[in-house]
Length: 148
Length: 477
Image (cartoon, rainbow over all chains, first blue to last red; front, side, top):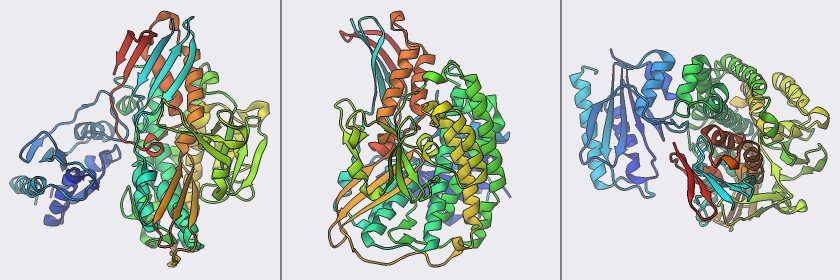
């Protein structure tokens, strides 16, 4: 059976920025057999854990989309100067590849439309709806790829 | 005609900052300033909140060293409750504090500064980062990442999550340690020790590699401030403040940390949001002092763990006749010694049967209207001082942060490096020179989120301006 990792990230005190975390929590409840990590931001330490998985989902809030999206990504260095305190999903995959000579068979980014980032522990109505839809997207991939 | 060189923002530090370098009529460096250009103001918006919320709130000042704020805030709460916390709670808090040191120091040394050291200040900035490090020495990079992970894992085990854990509270901690988790942490120790020794070996090679640059890399005398135990040992959770000068004279001894505000003032300059703490008896700016690894390893009489103590003795030999190491470049070495101490002490704490005690919290209501908490955060001594009303509502909060306390010294370091490496007559600044100036700042591992308190990063933008404000040269990265 494929080893699946779901990484939800964002700031739970900044309104819609928590969308990735909320979605990952829901995915975790739906599929108890998968591994789920909730983090404030992506950091290099995750590279090892990622390298040990077959399928990885990164779930994050996205201000540039209207509907939830899911897409495959490949390893690569996006930032000209990667930051130690934050690293992008592509760069994190690249780090897994370089450090551990292994990357997941498939890695998905799940984007959730987000618009309100004021101090709040609540999602906006649109983002709350999109969180539920994004979970369905993940579920559909998991079922079609026979991951569960 | 004078010229102004601006480096904005400074990279590979936490937060936003810029550096300006003022040239005089002869195109020599006349002045240099480290500007922190953002503001959050946690002290103000904690007013009106309950004392018991403060650890949770103040730990959100920073994503790098939240545990330090958490423990210090809880200690201020202990003081207001007027309680002595249970032995197990203190040991667990000590464990958390050391885990914070380890993960923060590992980040600073392996992720942030090593690219400069292993690849060189003049190497291609596009690869002078963690990927460049991986390409140059994969095992070194991998071990650094894992060492930080060890620190993070302890924090996660104790607090239930990696950052912003609400586990430490006034009176103690919320949950006892699960015995199974103790073994999980102990399993890391051999690898962690090996990795820190690797870092120490690397530091010594770095000292040789940069032998020509080090003498003017923040080399000056200043006061050194930190906690020591009752008998003068390296301390990180309790103890007393010791203040020494750059000639190894003890200026103040056995100072009660709860009286810190009687000894340290905060000056303000119009060009930075970061205040300029100083030692009051010497006034501003003569009362410049340094805190953090360099100060701590300098001022203590010994380190209680054997391997770190052996390294401390080697470190002291760098000082020559003075018996005090005044060069800020050696922050890195001191940081590695503290990593070794942290690993050894974590092992000791985990093997102490008291760490598994069940009595973890003292209960009390408000018994004092003012309280001070003090610990050694990774970057230096940290103070939280709260005034509350009889219901425990915060009336006033004062946070004196390590990075701010190093502000005067960081400025002095920038001035020294700029004067040594910038040739204003050429009217041009190179990437390598800029990186040297930035690396001077990175010696202190400043956390601007804590000290002002801000988040975020931008690409580097450097401008060389003449007195009329015209751009003579410009670099972006």
